[in-house]
Image 1 (tube, helix red, strand yellow):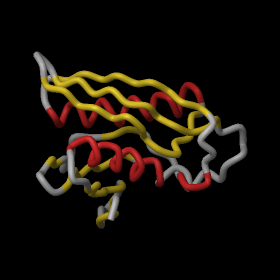
Image 2 (cartoon, helix red, strand yellow):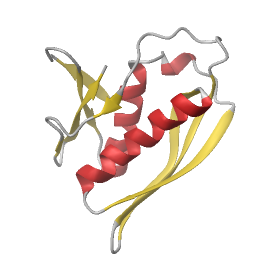
Image 3 (cartoon, one colour):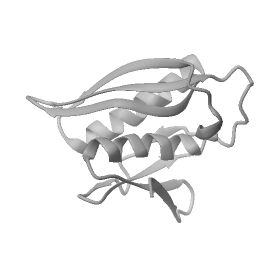
Length: 135
C-alpha cells in the first residue's frame, strides 16, 4: 500500500508508506496530489528537478510538499510520479528528486484543491509519514 486517507474533521489527513524515507516522501507527494487529480491519468510529459533543504525531517517533508504545491499554483503542474528521490543529511537535510507530470491545460479533471501542507498531526515513523493538508 502506497498511502491511505484517515478521518479528519475539516482537512485531509493521510499516511504514506514505504521501505525507505525517500519512498515515504514520494508516496506522500502522490497521496497529496491524489486529492487534486487522478495521478494515474496524468501523462508523464514534463520533468521538474527539485531540491529542498531543512534543518529536520518534518521541515523537510513540509518544504517538499509545499514545493509541489508551488508548482501547481505557478505552473499548473500535475503530478504523475516521483523519480530519483534522494535524501542526504549533511549540515542540513537535503532532498533532491524529479517530479514527472504534465501541465493542466484543462486536460485533467480537478478533484479538489489544497491550500497548504501543515505541521498539524505530522508524524514521521519507521513505518509511515503522516500529513494533514489544508483543503
